Amino acid sequence: MEQPDAWHQTDQLDAAPGKGDPFAAAVRATRMAMIITNPRLPDNPIVYVNDAFLRMSGYTRSEVLGHNCRFLQGAQTDHGAVALIREAVEARTDIAIDILNYRKDGTPFWNALYLSPVADESGEVLFFFASQLDVTDRVDAHMQIQQEKDRFEAEVAKRTRDLTDALATQTMLVHEVDHRVKNNLQMIAALLAMQTRAITDPAARAAMEAMLTRVEALGTVHRRLYQSNNVERFDVAEFARDLANDLVRGSGRDRIRLHLDLETVEIPVAKAPPVALMMNELITNALKHAFPDDRPGRLSVTVAPDGTHVTIKIADDGVGMPVQAMEQRSFGKRLIGTLCRQLNASIAWMTNDPGTIVSIRLPREMAGGLEAP
Image 1 (spheres, rainbow, N blue to C red):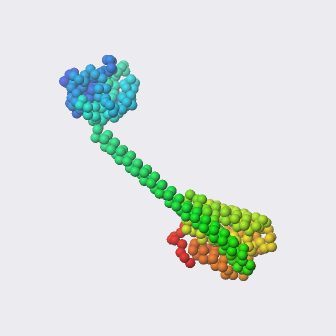
Image 2: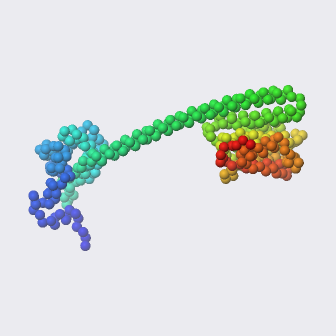
Image 3: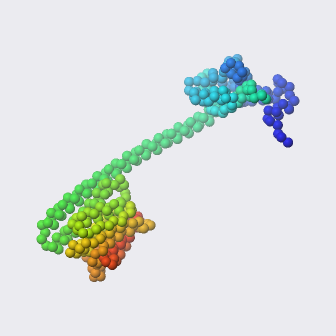
């Protein structure tokens, strides 16, 4: 059986108009403020007002009846909300909105307004029914929460700016330190170069030249740190590119082809000096021993991530390293061994057929600080 429309249900109530009308009695007795306006009259005036509305607004019935309800508006009433209500009236549709209104004594309050048209069977709008509810406490609580949220966000933004400024200052200071260390290492390298030129003993000269390349390698580390935006991480690949090119170019060996296979791998800055010294020793040894008598060849430098580790590989196609040389405990090999222990790294010396491969595998992160050997 089809259910009747809600407005048809009221027709089935056997009640006399006036005081006997249960709906009129409900509107009169409810504690919710209610008014009825007549859009068929000029300016859509109020034609009915209950006592709850008079108590809420502070006006008398004679001050309300026959007037448009805009008298509730005041200096801080949102014009956008007023426009939405006006559009709803013109469109003959309902609207629910919170709007700032004013009582007769000028006291502001937040009004939860619900406005709905009342139409006859033909669809003609006869009245507008409006209920009002003072929701000042709710709106004030929401605004207080919003203000606290805004203050919190402002404090977070200020704290973020302070931390950003502090980080920028720290970065600038660290870069300044790296810049000064780089300059000092360049001066030391220049002094070593001058002293090397004055040495006539071949063995002593070779030792000084080896020490010079180590100082220059550390200078390259601090140059890269000075140029980097990250003061905590060190890019092994970019360092390897700079170091290998500098060493091959500085050797004057034009017939050696340099091949670089480098993937970006970052390690903690504390690992940078020992990694730099180790790579310098291996590349320098290859240039010195793999290609005697100015023979041509290929030198390959590889840096690649390997899960939680980094693989650094130096390979050449030179004359190869004799077994006794692999077992020899030269200063360079002792230094490499010490650096490997510092880095908790493993190293393997292998034949390349022809040539030699040296492969190093070290953890990308440190469980603790680097320890002295």
